[in-house]
Length: 114
Length: 113
Image 1 (tube, each protein chain N blue to C red):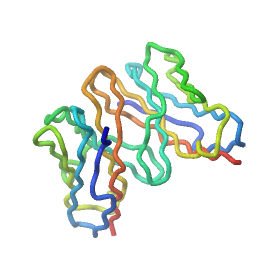
Image 2 (cartoon, one colour; image 1 turned 90 degrees about the vertical axis):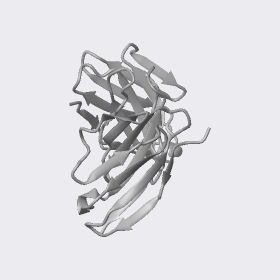
Image 3 (tube, helix red, strand yellow; image 1 turned 180 degrees about the vertical axis):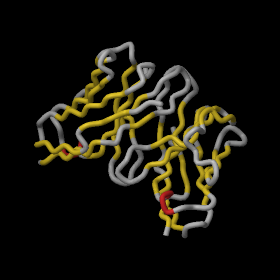
């Protein structure tokens, strides 16, 4: 089966600019996650969707980050305006709903803020 | 919220030796504990997971043990090979159908040929 697809792979922007990332989960996976992975650290959850509804966005910096999954399939994550500390890899993951299903990750988008 | 601590941060072993990575978690309600392997510039890949109703699980050269009382779990790799070199992350989550993971800080494993 096709894995989790993300684009772009790399993005370089200046601080205060905006940027958007796209994720297409594995077909049939109802749950979608966005994680932020800062260099040398483990991934940190930003937001979790179940179909097109938000399950957990408690760690999303809502003054600058937004995410949507309008049709319950692919998702976009946006940062506006970007700060230097947003430099990280943004990972998307998906899983089947319920019943202890594992998460499968995409290759991520490496974001560099100048 | 959940807090997961992972040790050691770096681990160097000789090819053929065993490697052990340990994690502790804070939330006694956590019930799912996966381990991911991440090679440089690549996606985290699930290598093994364990649920709280099981104390140990093996898959070829990889095993995971869980001690719910002490709230810690460990990854054991036997007969290490150079291709095992990577960063390994433990994680924990709780709740049926709500599998958002809290990750440890990672262990960089280097297997010397």
